Amino acid sequence: MIPAILATPRVLASLRAVLLADATLTARLATVPAANGGGPAIYTEGYVPADARTDYLVIGPFTERSTPGMGDGHRWGSDLTTVIKLVTMNSNLSVCYGTVERMIALLHGVPLKVADYDHGMALLETTVDAYSELIAGVPVWHLATLWNVGVQQI
View 1: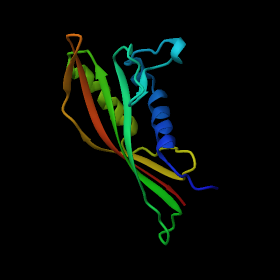
View 2: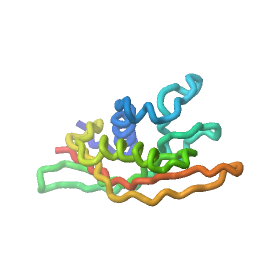
View 3: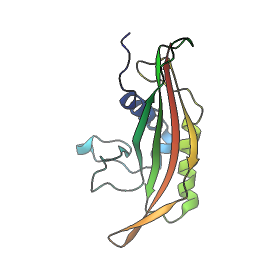
View 4: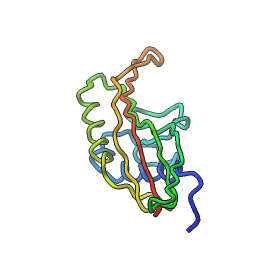
């Protein structure tokens, strides 16, 4: 097996797969038009369409640090940090936090299947208080969570 040079795209794909597989979570998200690929609205930071409808999730940006494990039984690995946030126009933040709680339940401490790695796990580092911005005079809320993701190849 060839060492994975950069874990970020593999981890992103894994996180998206877990989130998209949950019907409860995806039912709470807007639907992407079929012309843009269809499905629940989960975007990558920097690639959210200007016409995206809320509610949607944004994953990223990522930081990645190599964690070579020579001598401890691991061949290579990476520690990553990323943000996953809910973007919404719903002013009922208790409903929004329900969506965030579902996302946390799906990811926190659950083994991830990450291509080219034997082990992967996401751990919630912290949640950030909701903040809003005005877009065309309408408040848009951001509910962010910060995640640590570790992957290792043995």
